[in-house]
Length: 87
Image 1 (spheres, rainbow, N blue to C red):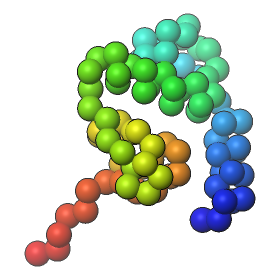
Image 2 (tube, rainbow, N blue to C red; image 1 turned 60 degrees about the vertical axis):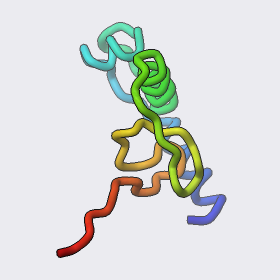
Image 3 (cartoon, rainbow, N blue to C red; image 1 turned 90 degrees about the vertical axis):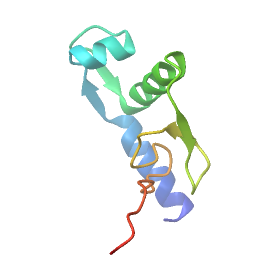
């Protein structure tokens, strides 16, 4: 993915919104039904992870800090799930 393509993709993600359900309301501190941008949601998730002492890992592609359970990087979109060796 080229730099311009990545910026366009990030721009599209930050312009989309999701409605907070009970879980997202608890996670973000926003009322149920509030519209949250992907940026707000990602920031809230990272704050929650840090506040609870949960594990973070670095994306092998862009080195951004992401949740330890993540399968894709929030920043660059790369698949970061562990690969399973074929038997």
